[in-house]
Length: 390
Image 1 (cartoon, one colour):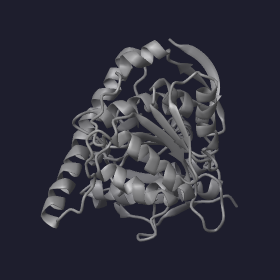
Image 2: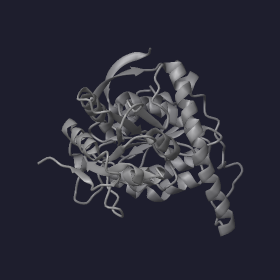
Image 3: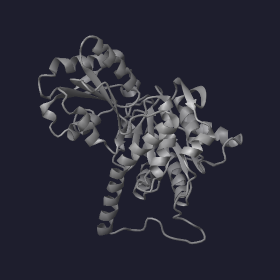
């Protein structure tokens, strides 16, 4: 066991990032992630972290700076939220399609408009086709631990892709939990020093990302998708190795909670999962055989594992903290329904809540379970359940 400390999710993020010994950090503040880069700035300034710290003029520049440093062989880090993520979209997309590994914290936030700075997952969901690996954390301990795991996943030769460590803005970023902090020696034992490929070297000038014809582009995209598929195995391996060293396993791609004999299952993502588990426990006390599946990774999407976990159940609902404008439902419901090829042999529906900082309460989770129990013998799609406070 390491050092026990109480800290916010943002502090957990920058503490975990510092344990990974980044060579360069680019920083531009935006609510609710600002204290992530502020914390790293303080560590560099006070001599507690040996890294180059670049204060830039925008999020677009932040991603461009880390992209250049990573292409020169460095281990890099930055963080953002919402409109900042939108502003960095051009180099953000290029970072993944150049197949350059890095880690970026994303304290998720609702997208404007209407004007808001509060929690939601619309920002992360809006870029899930940009080629990054995306993982979502439930607890502050998971935020810190996944920084270490994320670099190991990203830098694996079978993967070579950037990773977003996502967690709920304000609900996780600003609230305090007790954490077990590994020592630097323990972190070093788990995450070896980075020996990244050097694409840019002043001594050997070269063009990076030249104009690419379609036939070659086809190969690049296929290789990228192959790496995403390979990442699923790597994610499971890294979780097992982390558990062997630190005694904490998060389940890899998904976490299952009381699903073995469940008739009905709620699928959750991020910080809402703990509340969902409480609702499952209460339902069990009433004789309702409920279970929960936590989606830990959105990209690569764990379609096979999710379908296997739902097999034999009567009903499922997916609780989203974002919307799919094209389908009038939640995006993870849409993807879960696609993954379960015989979805209409189950009763199922989309539940949407927690937008713009609204609370996702125990009562909301209980209402999802109650609706599932009521319709479990009525296979097919049912109307979206909006989890609102009256």
